[in-house]
Image (tube, rainbow, N blue to C red; front, side, top):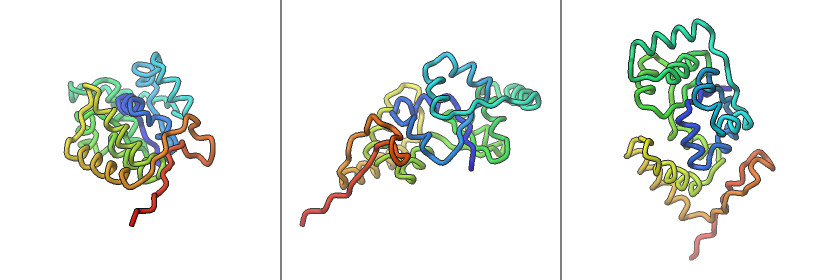
Length: 196
């Protein structure tokens, strides 16, 4: 099973979009470095929520901490939590899940597998965990935050596709009972018969 190293920005974005619980229905293991958790998540309600949903807080080794410090010295645009996440994602079978363009660029330069918010939304669609309407609504909500920076063309393509798919389906509202039956979170769709 692939292990996704969660950067705080992706967690906050998914919370804004109401898809945080949905993400944990995917067939991945989710981790975050201990130092990042303490600095950015522990004192926020989202930290306890993430752990309750299954986030595993992993300890960085002394070598990883040193590698993160070297990474920070090499690029002043990166925060310490960015560097901690990047070095954690260098582990075997790990992928960095981040929302910061600078971190993504640096991760790619370091040959670290890296994906972002749109990638995780695509995985939710592929696994039929969230309906097209739920994804379009979530992405629209996420985009309202002033710090969110996503590639416009990719966002517009997804919103157009999800809206078109949603227009052809009858969408039930998300249930408040996440994960109660069958591991789904209540985002369900039923195809309507097209009128003749």
